[in-house]
View 1 (cartoon, chains in turn blue, green):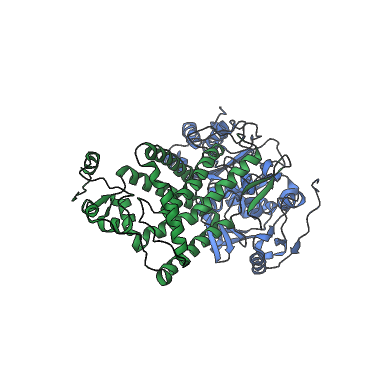
View 2 (cartoon, chains in turn green, brown; view 1 turned 45 degrees about the horizontal axis):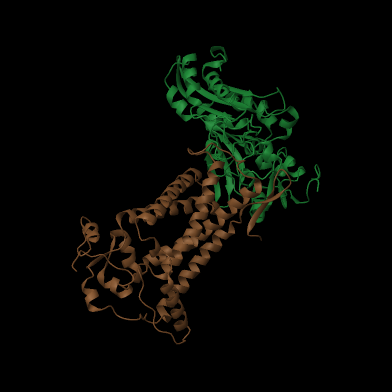
Length: 342
Length: 290
């Protein structure tokens, strides 16, 4: 029987007005519930009738999940961004632009203006992978099956992983995730056991830990806010996204770095790359290796080479290795100092 | 609620993809129930065991104090296999019940160790051990019939003492062979689906249905092994079986236990009068007091 597209399966729609009510609903329905934020990822799943939740919990009516709040006196401890804050709000927020511009840069290149008006920060970091075999509803590992259709000799895997692939080679499609990792953000979760705060890099998981999820949220859990400490406020930021077209596209790869220099040397740095693995990768070894070194093309070159160590290309994505090497190089030495080399 | 998980392949074919994971709990509960029922039976209801006849005094005199039972090589195989089996079970099923960790690499490495150790065991048992000692023989069948009749209160002569291995051991070994070979054979092919050092990945080695059935067989044998391993560990820890367990550590069992359970005519212990036996005992710290 042909699959009916564009007509969502029936479900109970819940529109709570508080986090407590939302959490109660999510706990009540467990794995039968679907969390609806901006809806941009959700409606694909629902209209394609690949996901058929019994209950949809729409968070759009919860005011406490929206907005940017300062932490500490005059924002001295950083900011807290509600998970339902739209990407446009993030891009235009003066404090974010002034102190945490890395996040604004990343949010500004997500998809298209219309999508950024609707899409939320929480949704952007929690969205599912775009691997088309998986999105088409095929029974791959990520869907609970026993095969990865992309990691086959004939598989279309140009956009897939070069690092940390473990049976599944899908990648995380978020633009804001690497920026938040570079800013040392913390994600605030509401779980059955209470509030839990995790480092941004620990929010994301690879297929080695759980092949069916890209993040740690369990049924019943809710991402409520993202806190950015002031540690990196006003640092030198670099964000670059490579995509097939300049608007309304997911990243083939992106890089985000936050750097503090002392003279010509790199005093502190955090770098994260997305589109290379199933989770955004913080390049800790690279950070350690270049700390204290001069911010030059040579340092960037070394960092780029380190970053791709262990990369295993698939049939059609070997280009991602020089791409990642060069992105990391540019994130350190800047575009002017870096030349594209394969 | 089915026993298997099914999916629709890209070609519209309905194929099994693996067992339903609730079978893990079924196996676990079945194993526990067996343990409880068996322990209760032995504690409250079982009668004293009776065997056909005592061993002649001259035969007893020839039995050494420490009766060699498992060679060092056989013991090493057993413990390597046990370790790899436990790692395989934990890495396979803990993630399914909520303990998330990077299990695949440990799983295939343990699987490779198990495969090599089983291949070694087959060759070792075929050419260096008494191959038929672990297979039920006519006496075992006759004695099993006698034991069943006596269990139900029907007249039957007492069964004879065991050969090297009691019938229960032999049957358990047979079931382990079935499950073990099933997981090993399917597991070797399943390695073609993940990245290992052995073969290039080739998920198209078989069709979707064949792969699906392979995953199902692997899963069924795997959950079967949960119950079997539970039983095995339980018997290994039971007080009356401890001499057998100790023999798997030290290589020998006490003469008293040997005479109590085993028939010297069915399991002939090599003594110093046998040149090959003397050679075997030498250097193993065993004392032949016969």
